[in-house]
Image (cartoon, rainbow, N blue to C red; front, top):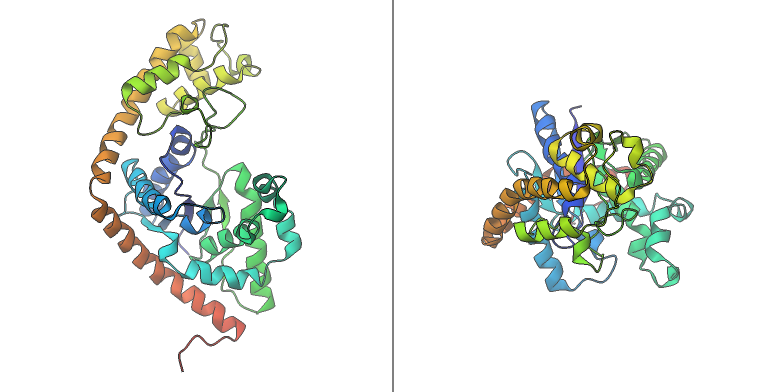
Length: 340
């Protein structure tokens, strides 16, 4: 069968540089490669995943539109990829319940992200937070995805999806579910905080100076890079020289990702210079890269009706693709969905 790629992102507010270089830019590249080979990409806003913790309803609705605008502004093309919000395709929730009856508590107890997200208040966490890896499994199995782009922190969840699919297929003597393969993009960049090179760039960091937002203007970007934490040592000529310098390594990595170069190539250009010379060059490259994205994003956010139209069209395509799989799951279980 032709390649079918499925991936989602939670609508938690404006995207930042880490989201863009770590995932979204690779979505854009994937959609072109997959379309050229006759395959399909399904990209969705994971609003059902968002409600595993409390969200203000009005804010969540606004964030869905805002995230859709950001994805389109960064290059996700609704003419090439199916872009939609998860809640608009009820089959996601429907299949998740069926797969909850196939998954095993022991499997979910091994999921490390639940332990991290629930912290010390495990008993106070929602059942949705505990079971969200099963919804993730439904997200990809419902479209018979052949490939799922994953980072290191999501490999375990894809393995769970494969385990659930295998058990369902075996239990009910069917070949309904395809076992998706991990797709680890070679150009995915791990972008760290501008204030702490050991922590990932994050929307949840209380300091806005820790991240570059895709909506930041040129002055904000320049100020944030100028104030980014570094060290007094000059830039080395070899990546090994950055091993114990996390902040320096992060800024070099950002430049390399933006310029589509290796860190070694960047170091060869700036070897021996201090960050007083490097930071203005990095800020200039960031402004040049992000300005057209911010401009397009502002235009899209002025037309919420068009964003709703794009998401509705994507959801209709997604529902058509999902329906046969949900029907097949009901049939395999001996359940009758027909009205009598």
